[in-house]
Length: 205
Length: 205
Image 1: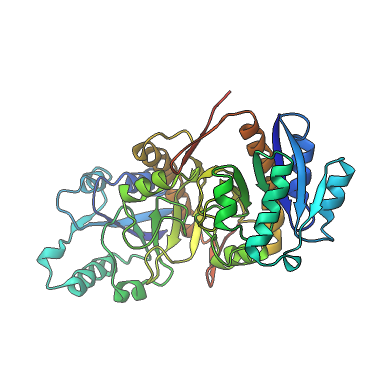
Image 2: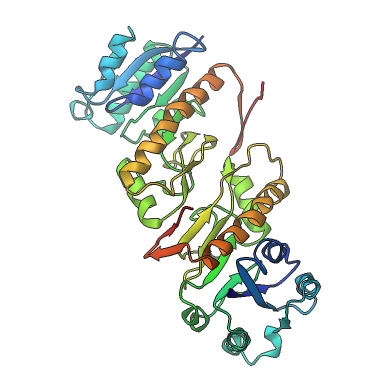
C-alpha cells in the first residue's frame, strides 16, 4: 500500500476526506504533519490512530531548515506521496525536488483562473465573486516550483450562479473538494495516474 | 420583439443557432453584418430572409470609419442588441459606447482563463490543450473596452479530459456554444437579464 504523508495547517476537513475514503483501503496515511500546534487536523489524525507531528516554522532556523525537518519526518515514515490538505506554507525548491510529481495540492478554483500568488483561502472566492464568474470548482494538481502552476490532475466544475456571497461559493466548492481530493489520491495509490509534461492522464477502469 | 443585429466574419454556425432558436420567436434578427464578402453566414441570412450587409474594413478610410459604417447600418435597422457571432475584429470604444451592455460576445473558454489579446480561434484551444486543463467551455459576456473583459452573462462547463487534440476540444466546446449563445440572447430578449456592475443575474422562471 502506498504510504502517504499529509501536510495541514488547520481544521483538516480535506485530511478527513482522505482518512474516510483512502486510508487503509487503497493507501495508508503514514504520518500527518502540521505547522500549527493547535490545528484540529491533529485530533483527526489521533482519532484515526495516525502518527502526527508538529513542526513550527518559528522554531526552525529558517525556511530551509523548516522544510528539511519536514522532509526528515516524511523519510522516517517512508512516505511516497505528499498531500497538501490546506497547508498554508510555500514549499522550498529543495522540498519539491525531493518529491517530483509526488506532491499533490488542492486549489479551490479552476486553475489557471484565480490562482498563483495572493490567491489563497477566502481571497480566492472573494475575487471570483467580484469578477462575476458563473462556474468555479476545485483543481487538484502536482506541485512544481510555480505557485499553483504544476500539471493539473483533475478538476470539477461547480455552477455558482446561485451563490449570493463569497462564503456561499466557498461552501459549495469545499463540498466538491472533499470528493475530488480523495478520489485523486486513490487513483495515484492505484497507479492509474500518468504524467507527460504538463498533461496528466488517468486510466479508466 | 427586440431587434437584433448579428456581426459575423465566417461560417456563421453561431448565427444559425440564433436563427433556429430565437429568430421570429423571442427576438428578431433585423440585420446581419459581415466584414468578409465571402462569409458563408451571409448565405445563412439570405436563406432565412434576413437582410445582410457587407462592410469591408479595407474599403473604409480607417478603423473608426469602419465602425461608424457598422453603427449606421445597425441604426438604420433600429437594432437594440448586437451579437458578435464569430466576428473577428475588435470594436472601437465609440462603437462600444453606442451600445452599453447591449453587445454580446461568445468566447470559447471559461473566462478569465485563456482570454484577452491573442486568444482567438484555435489559439485558445491549443493553449488549453498544452496547459492540460480538464474543464473548459464557452463564456457569453457583455462587451466592454477590455478584450473579453466585460460582465459574464453565462458559462457552461465542458469536461475535456477525453479530448486528445486541440481540435477535439474545439468541437466539443462549439457544440455547447450553439446552445449557450441563443439561450442568452433569448433571455435578454425576454427582459430577464440584469446587470449590476460586473455581476449579471438572470431571472429564473
